[in-house]
Image 1 (tube, rainbow, N blue to C red):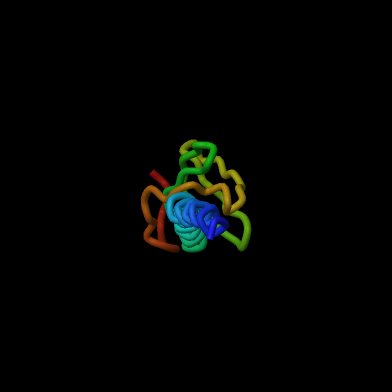
Image 2: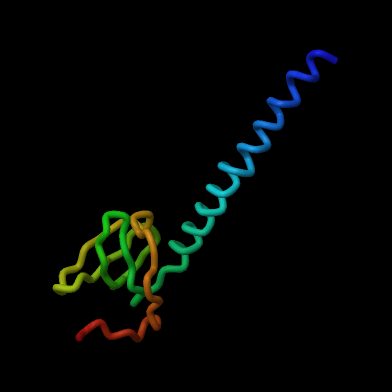
Length: 96
């Protein structure tokens, strides 16, 4: 019985860590992964480095981003932090 009294707090700590740290992190990772998989041409995005631009083209692992000055930069899909404005799809004109 003495051993059971020392194991219960340890198990309780692991359960608390799971619900307070591990589970929310897994939810965030799933949300980011689904956002990166749903990227499409014309989406206004922000990279993890803070670059703002529009998606010009996509393939499996890379994204070409059109910046405000018209330059096109190639990034990994994993470098996209968020979509700030969803594009209308393939028919989007990026000229101003």
